[in-house]
Amino acid sequence: MNLPENLKYTKDHEWVRVEGDVAYVGITDFAQSELGDIVYVDIDTVDKDINQNDVFGTVEAVKTVSDLFSPLTGTVQEFNEKLENNPELVNSDPYGDGWIIKMSISEASEIDGLLTADGYREVIGQ
Image (cartoon, rainbow, N blue to C red; front, side, top):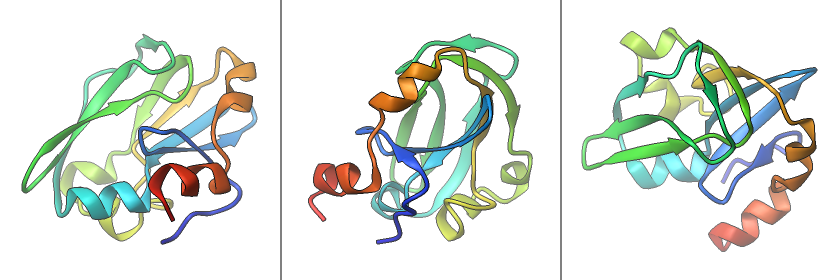
């Protein structure tokens, strides 16, 4: 199971990479493996303000559709356009080219409430 130590995680299986006042968000390696082959990523929140734990989009796999929950409060700035034609990047490179959104961070204090890699391992029983 690939869990980079430099990222933060949520119990809902999203990861966060913080760069200054911007966060990149995707789903974890564990989540993509549980979902199976991802065929579509639907994000309709670009340029919208969202609160922590709000649904910001969905990921559609062959077997199921899963909501994506925002790990932080902020504004969705960008959807990873590579996923338009290559949603499988979420499966093959979940922490790299498979990132899903880039968002501004409104409440930096929320970062401290996110899980470390060790905390997330406990959530998934690894």
